[in-house]
Length: 129
Image (cartoon, rainbow, N blue to C red; front, side, top):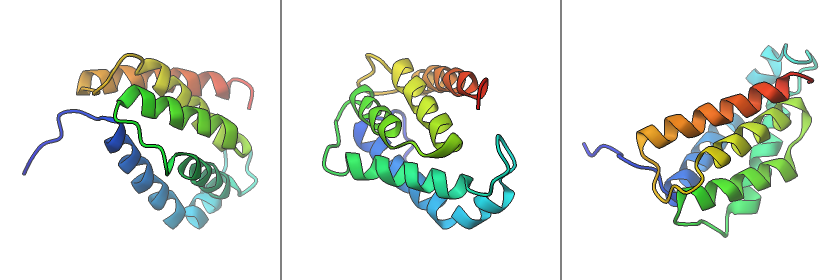
């Protein structure tokens, strides 16, 4: 079996499609377990709406570079964020994008750096939900 050694723009887009499909298939469950930051039972709906909005914005533009694709995803996430969970996810994508700056192909080390940046952005968004 071939191992994936890098992520480029096309692979990021495929991951976005797969992740969105997983959230859509579990939307009701996510709504049911929603307790933070506000226990209003709409986290699954808001995540599904936000991710679908990102897919709609990116479906005809798949950049070959990882950093360019993540910038497009982050912009679409900020534009389409819905609810607290959507805003938190949008901030994660913005941090992921900023952490990936200059990366044509993202290595495992580059991914770790970008995810750490995304985590910090998301954590900052939690300060005032």
